[in-house]
Length: 322
Image 1 (tube, rainbow, N blue to C red):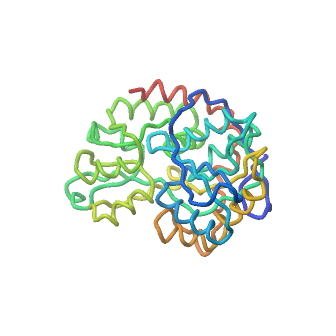
Image 2: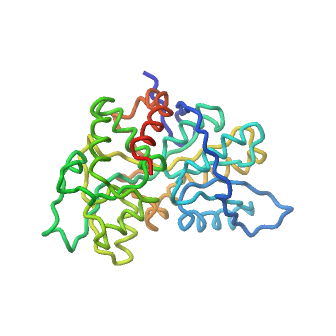
Image 3: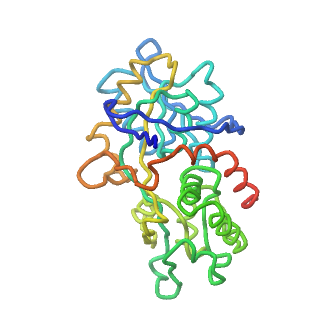
């Protein structure tokens, strides 16, 4: 067994694998930063939401004098677009640091030698179901993901397109836990039940809030964000066999042009103070009293997941193609 998992200060090193991703998405970045062109700088590819990341970058720049040039992904291709860009730039890296709001792509890029093998995992979101709180008495509330294939939910389930972001990771984790045959049967049954496939978890929550969907599959931070806006939604926890923890991860780019600045920003992002700030702002939760996310027993072996990634994503694309 070779688990490998993320912790700060180089306590343990990450191992993972990446099957090549072929879709390179241009034009997905926005640059922020207000330092001068002649001073120290660091380029970070951030799959964390811009609304959460930018204030942290501003604080780092104020404290250190290092200009942060941040490149962001979009909601529809969350994480995947920037991961592909890092892969395409492997021979001539343009980024110095990678900050992701999920874990699988980080492990893939480490396996390909795009990222350095040391990094941090911090904070926690979880996969949940979401329902409209003002319709709980009128809408059947499923207890499991398996229930979403029942006729009662035909055309009433919303989910982000499962080739990107945490939805892709979640489905691939389910493949590991349930076994390939059972997982394929469930995916095909869900497809046959005509789910509403949308561009991102936040859209899932809004469809549920508006009544266009009864149930959604999403992340806890998207439900919390909608609740702060006053939308009538509530998270429905999944059991341990169907849910999963989703930590943030940060890692240095191998061959980075500004390695010292990258290390300083990585250390800054992994501090307890920054984790508490991100939790307060709604980017994630803090499990217990600590900021390190404990590895879930079912996912201590990532190698087989990454080994089968390319074929599994290809099959998901065929099943849920739109």
